[in-house]
Length: 158
Image 1: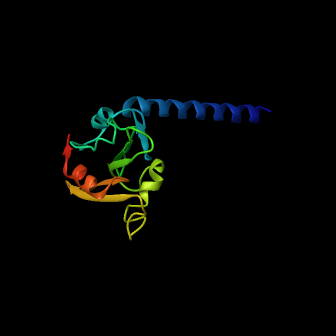
Image 2: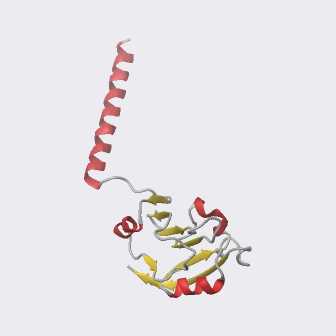
């Protein structure tokens, strides 16, 4: 019985010590960062948490700003994606971002990325990309390719 009591006491002290070490770690280093895609509240929140962020200086009238959803991913493969929705439903959708693999929310558009489908997008999707500071920025949408080109040409670093 004494042996069981001393074992339980040692186990309790081990749990307490682990909790203290974890609390000290979080206090000193801050909250741990997620390695997956995280929804952030706004473009401004994205700009505060990572650099660089590219924003469109041109969007077709059919699309609404600000983005409906903004995602970011930290870690070894950082990235960000924005979902820009139509002003009226049904209407075109546009995804703008950097980083692969992409968030689950953009599953239909993700088939446009070369790693997913080397032959390109299935209708009605189109994609264009351009390198910015050694990273590939993607514009994936159901818009006409000429409109995508205008969006891509108007991307500005902020």
